[in-house]
Length: 177
Image 1 (cartoon, helix red, strand yellow):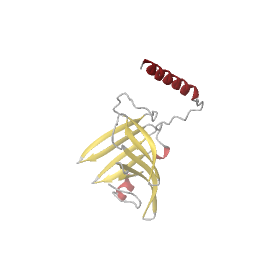
Image 2 (cartoon, rainbow, N blue to C red):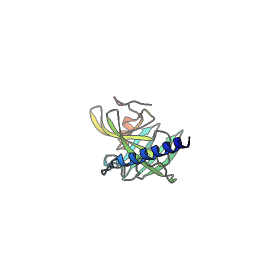
Image 3 (cartoon, rainbow, N blue to C red):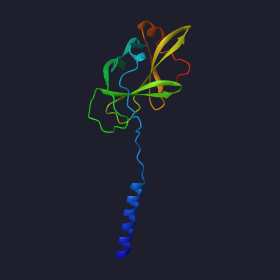
Image 4 (cartoon, rainbow, N blue to C red):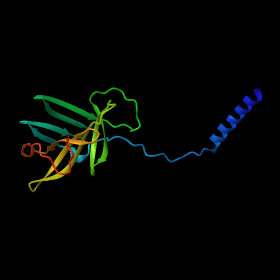
């Protein structure tokens, strides 16, 4: 019995040493993937959405998203400050106004996905900018979406005039809540 235990121990040691010696090291490291450091240029404007007699606003700058929304007649202002981190990071210090963003391809379009810094669950907010046609005119449109299916909830425009004119218009090819 004692010889069997020693034999198993020797075999395990040899396998461990052989496994270590047999391993090859890789000198090239894979590029570390990060969240976005800045908001892409095409988003960096003030955008307007008109619904139920009120203008909602989203303002994107290099590292900040600020907004004014209405829900049940009450206005809510918010802001998210963009900070970058490695996609593999799992532990974060608590920062209530920090956010991170990544790009993702959904339904033949590139979206940015903005999530709270400490957000553990949920899809976050998705945004994309595309040029859309309405009655023969072309407009830059910021689409806002959410959920696992990236369902569109609102469109924002570069001017209040266009926002009021198009209101809650649904564009072909979008999937809405």
